Length: 406
Image 1 (cartoon, one colour):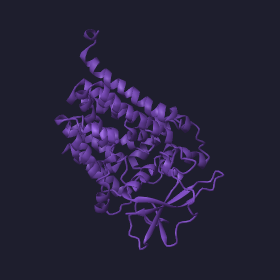
Image 2: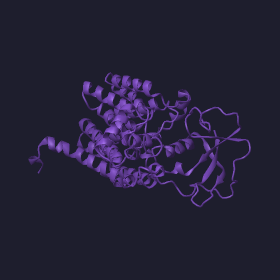
Image 3: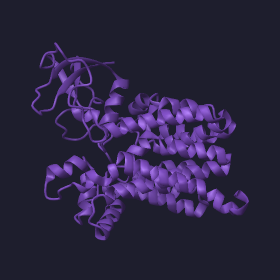
Image 4: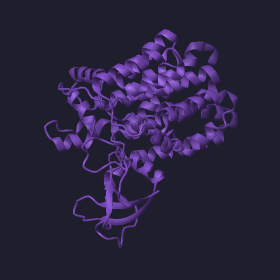
């Protein structure tokens, strides 16, 4: 049968299948085919908040034709793109379909890259792992231009030098911090660096703490790149996987100097790990390769279960705890330092001998605010000891105060 199919058609069949499956996972499985977005009542702020969480409301405003002033979370290019999308359709599900499609095309790019450098079997496994990379699946459901900006960044590693420079510039125009990652390609990345710097100068820089302190704290947390099983698989990819492993670790270290580093910043590294793991799986055989795919699918299942669904009760034992933290303890937040914040950041010096942080329902759900990942990171920076809890019931949120032990 294959002899009747042109070689180019056979080569394109695998990336096409990967793209279709990746979109189905992002838009259909986790994104619930847009049902949650279509239920938004534009006139009810509570309804909007339940879907477009945190900074996503800036995207929602742009979609409605009233974009906010440019800021570090929504660049002028991103605001303009979503305003154009709103002019083309009034369906709020478009704000899910667009990033899901961009995320699917990122998986196609990973497949094509691996096919070019490692052959068909490695490309097939790499495509499967990219489809099921939990952090990438989740951020491909966010209205924020995360997967949207990641797509041209990925293409910059596939295209010739001049088109690659344009791709890196487009990525940095949507998310200025990505201008730094284009430098991993060399000279073509300078265009992205310039656009990213110009965008930040116009829109303002995000809140930052000490880059050196953040680097020391974040560098060991390579779990931002992906699940341990994926990291372990990629590490066995052999000499052909060394460049991809180098990209993954470089992405992690380049973004680790940001106090609020999250998995949204290291997605390029996670996709590089998928390519390296694909090379490894092509050497292992079907059973180990399938086992890794099933582990990733289980992680995606957990993402789907936590997608905008905070837990109704605390995930830890709170019986017997007092209703207020001990006297003399200072409450801190999991945020980076922000001017005027009512609760100071945990990364700022504190004169108090005891510091506590409040675990709340929003830390147990996946949303674009990244609070679930912040809670994960707090658990790795500190030893968390429950010291107080409020579980009022009746639909009111619970809170558990955790003492931060270094």
